[in-house]
Length: 386
Image 1 (spheres, helix red, strand yellow):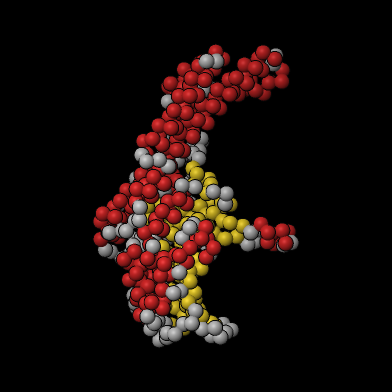
Image 2 (cartoon, one colour):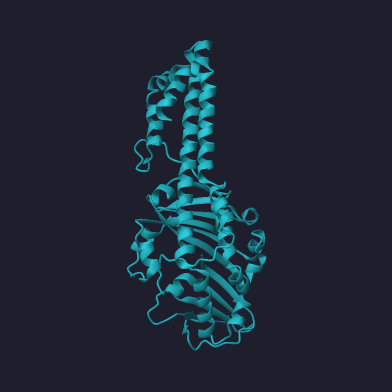
């Protein structure tokens, strides 16, 4: 669950005998902390000499599995083992490390999929109200400081932005790295999946812990003691993701037959669209007919598209549910209040209910269109693609 993390430990009393020295900065001593000689994923340490404050930064997940290409997720047992080893290598007690303040924490899952990860990364269009950036098959969301931008000159505006979420094809990232993944039971299970989608949300500061109503987790000890509730936080943020399918006949992501049918339906209206070029020359009655026809076409495509988007989100939620269930059963993941996490994923107690809601919207449109003589033929055509 947890991955990249930043910890600030005041009054550090340990030693750096087990660390490798990095180039020094003014008033700071910088080190790398490796789990073993075989590891390629160190934690970065910064020790502020005047205040005796130690800052720890890096991926505790990759540090524990000793591989930057690991596709495994960190369970509560593994997280505790990891930080116990960190304390041991720093020659301090585990209780002292537990007092560290977490200034940033990443919550992420590597989800095995039944379909291509690109189906989701190409159609993800929003996460809450954050700014989006799509690049090389990954989708990143940022929070910008609007107040700071107002105080800056025009060429420096938008320069400050804080990453709050990232969704990408995990296997594509792994393939881009040359190191071999560590082979164990969980790694082999995940490796069997042809596709893995990485979904990670960032808690950017200590105040954000309070916003999520887990203020006690801003201390490392509190985070480890309440590790099971982090899955609920992740699920609540996941619920804010919004997918919108492409309606492009040539798109490689139109794997859903219903989406192809929408495009085919629109293509059949070629004569109507050609007539729009002479719309201003039509009579008032003819214009009314064209408007009614357009309304029917748009209603059909929009509602059908919404159904596909909802179905796609439900399908992804099913993959997440299977993965979490497997983690609980096979690897002993302690997910606090798992039924609530499930309801949060689907937005209702059962995924079938979510699908029924979208289908009922389609039926409502069909009834409204059938009452209108001008839209009756489009209501009939709806039966062919519904």
